[in-house]
Length: 103
Picture 1 (cartoon, rainbow, N blue to C red):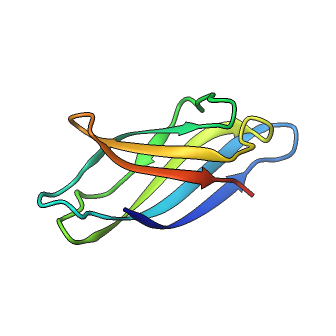
Picture 2: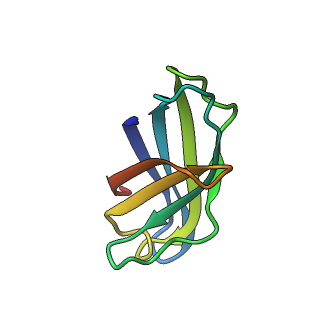
Picture 3: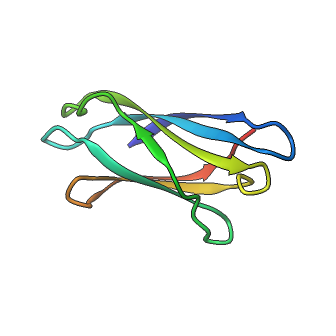
């Protein structure tokens, strides 16, 4: 379960730059959870490509973990809202977070 998110934009108008979303995730499972992949799907069902997922350690059961998803995008490509999806190494969905926007 994701209970907090913060989004960032480092883009000079008219150029490519970086957008990122930071998410605090609560592992409600019985085993440690390690995110392996992520996607950001936009309003027209387009996915931003070339995402980088930053996660330092597996998230133990009952604990919170901080994740950051970062991607190169122009200002027009990063207009939302987006749906953030995170999954583990087996491909099981861990988090689906709707309404992600970038400033």
